[in-house]
Length: 289
Image 1 (cartoon, rainbow, N blue to C red):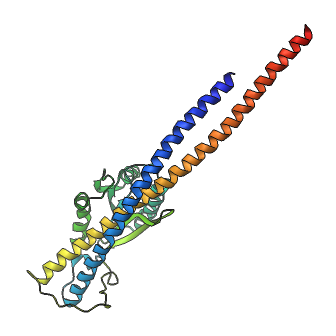
Image 2 (image 1 turned 120 degrees about the vertical axis):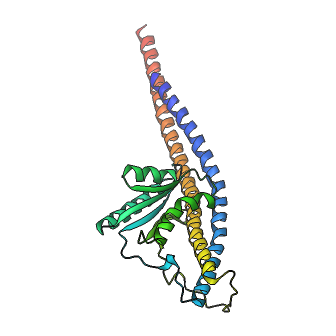
Image 3 (image 1 turned 180 degrees about the vertical axis):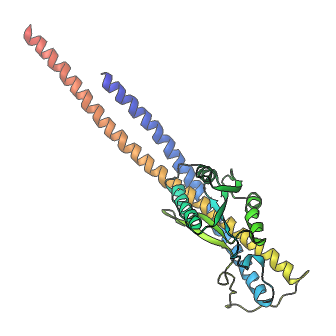
């Protein structure tokens, strides 16, 4: 029964794998709920900051913030690539990195040099492999995004845009749609369009008292707004990561169950064949006697 012993070993191995994937599925489900709550909680802040900045911009039309100026003469662009630190989350990272590759080729065809900021280990490894110019990075974010870890690397591109060294900044991440669906997107972060900064006219119009002056207030608000957009993208990416990991681990657990059932069927057939052979040998021996 050497074959039967080998099959029993395979069944034991797959059962151990199934236990691990089931545990990872449950952990991802727990983290997913927290990540989704964090993502939804971040949305109202970004919307409120954008609204106030838009009202201030309309109250002071003579001042244009550097983030809203267009630098056509610059022949460089920045790309912020948001991915996960860990794998085992299906094709999530593959899809977003495919979108990034397409964007980099598009920029290259226009004669524009790309500078990248990597947020997440998977994106950093990919950008290094394809030989992209990585100007800053942030890895090891954990399960909770912290703005202080994101501001430093991203500020490199924001400062470069404000100085007119690059003509656009793009943000690439995985957008959370629902538990079963996540969408890879590449959005233009800078320059801020007039549509993005359009004030909401549904409520009353406000008159502001500025301290120290309108320009300083608008500068600070627009920087906070851009930072909140980046934080929101990272929060959405983390919610997508846990959802994708939960779905991937559930699929792995189900597949392990199917493999175990197939191996048990093969084992039973092999065992039955061995028993039948032994019985045939015993009957043949008794008949010979």
